[in-house]
Length: 425
Image: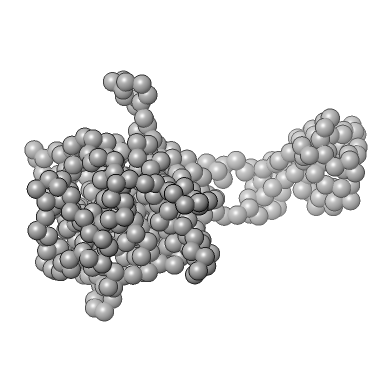
């Protein structure tokens, strides 16, 4: 390998495009451009899809590699947010999809899809990749390579964060060594220069930390330490408390302000000396003056964003009697947070591994435009009835109540003309 400051993966046939499988054997192409052009056939519309020339919400049945290559014609550089939850390559076979490829073949399956996803992203777009710890290290290195900076164009693509999502609460007592209770979500920007993420709204719990113990007309406040751990010798001085007692910072610390600034803050009633005026001084911070949003953290707990159990409850009503429940559905609260951070109303959202339809359901209730792609039977067994209920206003679950969703909108249903071979083995 030639010298590079970037770590790269290598595996057999990495320089080829895995087009699918025929008679159990992989079919290889030299470039994505060699993929056969398969038409998207519009089968029906439901509700009130957006009129031409503004494209409607799209629910598409077919292999996402071929679907995305067709979507480039109209959606290249237009998708604001992409969320994908690909098969984790655990070696298991689930009711709704197969999840076991040899590691190199799995990477060959993911590589061209990531390349197409990058092409579909808007310049200020962002990609969220949901994965567990088996393939996450490999997938991150691959995505780092595809979303690398381009010195020629000045593009600053790349990794933004790795989120840990708590997917379950109860431990698995049959686990051999550790009971895994989290997944990862890798976050990538098309171009960091243009990316802007929205803060999360402050919660009632966060606001409850602010009170108004002295009836300050500026409203609720909280207090913070007035000293700093990197001392400034010029900021070590005595302060006389309202009680008459004098205090100085603890050893190896100093006040956070020079004496003149402290006097200004005290005169403006921004220093708290305790109820009896005899406590170490603290700086008052008013709720009205703090940012109204909170920068997202990289650990998302189930009480904030739901878990797989919550996701199962949301889709049970759409599964016909006798059919298995989708194994690991994602809750709408998880997608609500992602879409809140990454999009505004009217933006395009894409999920190329739609699964049980959570992304499209949440996007619709949040007034985003969406495209969902799925090749498995669950698109007809779960996604179609679920999205029809969203549009009819008869889906009571998920974020319906929080978004005050009562129905509306629509989508068009498409089927990709099937290739002469299978996308999966």
